[in-house]
Image 1 (cartoon, one colour):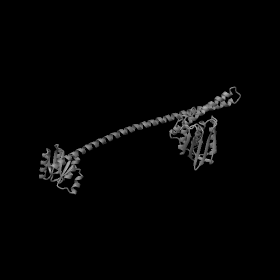
Image 2 (cartoon, rainbow, N blue to C red):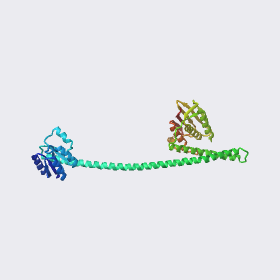
Image 3 (spheres, rainbow, N blue to C red):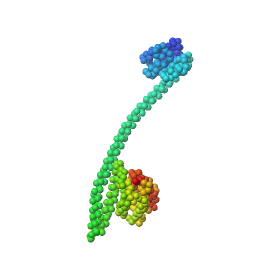
Image 4 (cartoon, rainbow, N blue to C red):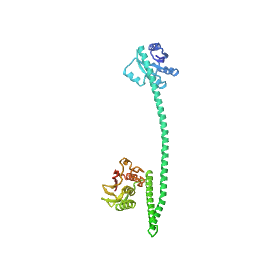
Amino acid sequence: MFTLRILIVEDDSVSALLLQRALEKNAHQIIGIVDTGEKALEILGDNGADIVMMDINLAGELDGIKTTEIINERFDIPVVYLSASSDAETLNKVVGTNPSAYVIKPFNIRELNMVIELAIFKDRKEKELQKLNNELEEKVKQRTAELYEANKELTKALEKEREINELKSRIVLNVSHGFKTPLTSILSSAQLLQLYAEKEHPLKQKISKHAHKIEHSVRTLNNLLTSVLFFGKADENKLEFKPKKIFTAAFIKELLDTVNAGIENQVTIVPSIGEMPKTITTDPELVYQILENLLSNAVKYSKDGKKVDFKIWVESGQLHVEVADKGIGIPKAEQHKLFDRFFRAGNVGITEGSGLGLSIVKKCVEVLQGDIKFASEAGKGTTFYVSVPVK
């Protein structure tokens, strides 16, 4: 049993004396015996105490309950109530002050000591819990502050990364635009050389051959720059849906003429035009990118003498397209990467290509809010199925 400094607040002198003897018998120190709440508060203000034994009914203006409320607020000292009454009304009054214990008069010494020990134990545990709560709150505040600072640093880093990406995009776009003009000049010069070679010239065959090589290389590089510019716009969120009226017959003819002009092998495109209105409304540039890339790829990866089937029709407000080839196909293990930028399947060999065409197709279909699927088998060919909404 540990020694406690105890204040007794009791307006019955006999009860106070009995309580004092019982407590001193257990080696506790009684710092005072008072009969009013006012005197109790005065002593606690001067000396403090480990515990207060509080009678509910006191002589002064402050009863035991009101005095306890003040003690809780000012001193945070545990209080044990003393009362001859155990009725529900009295119990309801004391519960609101969160007492450490409640002793019914008359009391026996053994029960009294047990109540005091439990009251002290309860008070210490509550204070320990409060201390832990305070420490936890402090840690939470500290951690919140750290997270706030970390978030600020992360925001700065993301902003810096965004600025760097914007700078890279601008550099790529500017460089790509810069290449366009000299490439156009080279292409024009190559075409002029071919015209000159048509006249009787001793080196006519060689001039024509090399001019054709120059023209082919320039077209290849120009297509690559066009792809880079396309993704530059896409990365800057400048790729927008711009619907226009399209004359379908002229649009398809221009598409086929362009793709056929670039065929380097002996592959034939077999068009099959189904139900098509005279005009449709959609974004012509995006639709052209889809069809031109799909047809060019089908031709490029087909063997000499093979055919590429090109079907196109409009049904229920959707433009449907099928492009089927009997070419090298796509290995099953690599098909999940088909629309990734710069992806080239392991079986393409030395066939030229940037790996951007199908990425462009996918992006255009997304902007048009359409759908694209494919079926492919290595060595047997590939078929693409595209549908986009039109008006």
